[in-house]
Length: 137
Image 1 (spheres, rainbow, N blue to C red):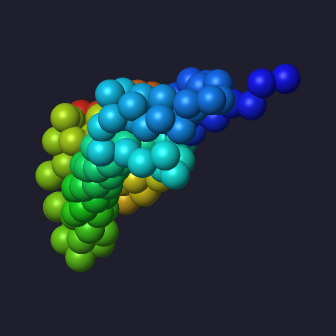
Image 2 (image 1 turned 180 degrees about the vertical axis):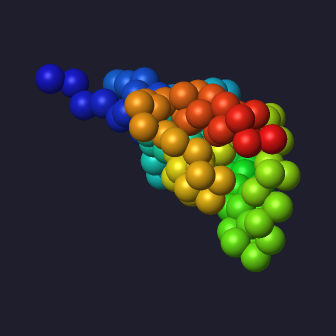
Image 3 (image 1 turned 180 degrees about the horizontal axis):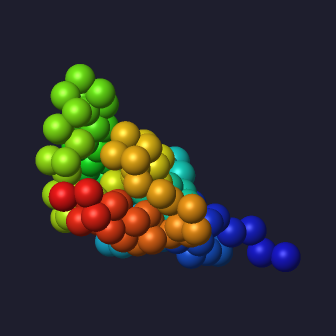
């Protein structure tokens, strides 16, 4: 069995005699700026650029979610304010109705006196509120 030296970066093998000189030449030609003691790169880890891009993407997603959350909170506060002013419940437009969640629609229907029995989807709830509004106006 012949003794050999192996490049830790790419796995190339160099047989003795001359392995040290051959490995030195290999390092200079194929891995400039690296030394024989450098470890092979861990391919499971992202590159710094990939890590920065992943963080930027996550920050963008969080920012989008925070904006959506703030908009929903504002809508909820607007609906809660309808307790103080009975006329404000009627200020929720048809377009705004379609954006409300099930609990928001149920709360609005209760405030306006709309019957949601049989409503299975938000579209059904919106229709029931619209029908109630047209019947009472």
